[in-house]
Length: 325
Image (cartoon, rainbow, N blue to C red; front, side, top):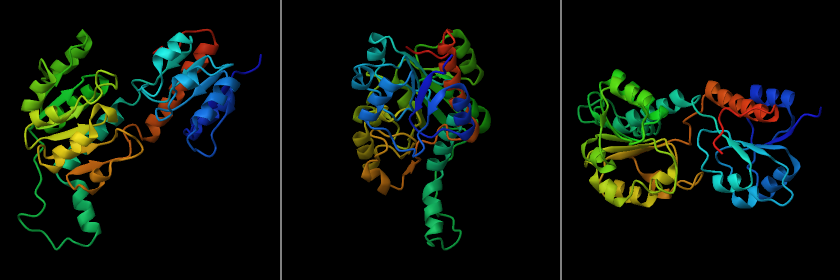
């Protein structure tokens, strides 16, 4: 029996690509250049499965390609807002993601951003590398203490709960959050770190020294953080975003930083990736990372193998374990 044909849109870890080639009739992206919409449409016509990443826009036009052959989209990433899910459902295309395996590494990045922006880590390294450091002195580059402060979390999914655990047990932070959709098992985890539920986003913002975003990208959460909500934060507070870029109104964030409505921000995601708003690049009270949340060898390999398992299950006539559509 012929192997299913799959097209992989970007370079994946070598071990994963090797397995893909063993299991499928695979076409890899040797150049690692992003595929255009036309190339994605061609892939939908020529392959049985498409394996995109969270930066590939799988639009209605791609999903509705005339003569489509692809029956499943195995997305490399826990998020799937890059895919028009409603169009996929209408076209009876299966969509899967890669949950769970990137929880700890993304939580680590959230803590890295929190610590770096609070203690002026990025600014300090630039200061030293540029030869500007003249030696220790009592008032030099003073930052904000992290231990014992209040961490407000918006959205208490797996990654957020891992952040809460690290922040509470590692830094003695008080945890408060807003998420009305937690099940009993998740609530038990939150209780173990002393998490205090709040009835609204605003209630969290009013008390938190650090606000960490962990909500999915949906029409309802787009620009969740806007001018009004930045104004609701404490003047010395910091925003941390490892969720999705469009959860934050970037123009409003820039204005809040410029006018010192908030003290700083740590960002791993951006509203129009890979473009980063020019004012952010010039601000010293912002720590910027290039979407590194899951960027460890162990996690990226685990994500890739998860895609393979989902797609293989589908072609074996089984229910893909991480089906989202």
